[in-house]
Length: 108
Image (cartoon, rainbow, N blue to C red):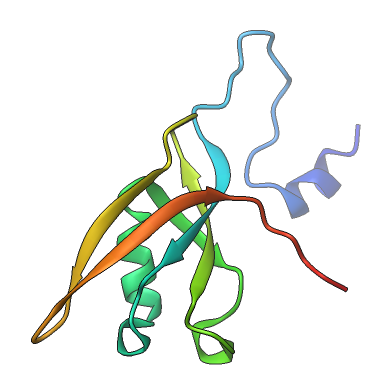
């Protein structure tokens, strides 16, 4: 009935079908161990690509107050098992980076 209005907000509008299913989901992961000189959007995109595609960061890299961890929202086709360890290589060293599933808690 309000298709014109819906088309302004959504990329695709179609009738719901009982056989429709999502092939991906969004999940928050938390990344630990990235050295301060490794904090860049490109590096977090690379880490996210191990499980899916980066949607957004909890905080923009340039606004980070702490380098302890970064929470990342990803679009993934995995419905379990989002955790692991990778080695992030810089020019002269490797850093162990740990990734685990996270729940985002925004404080007021």
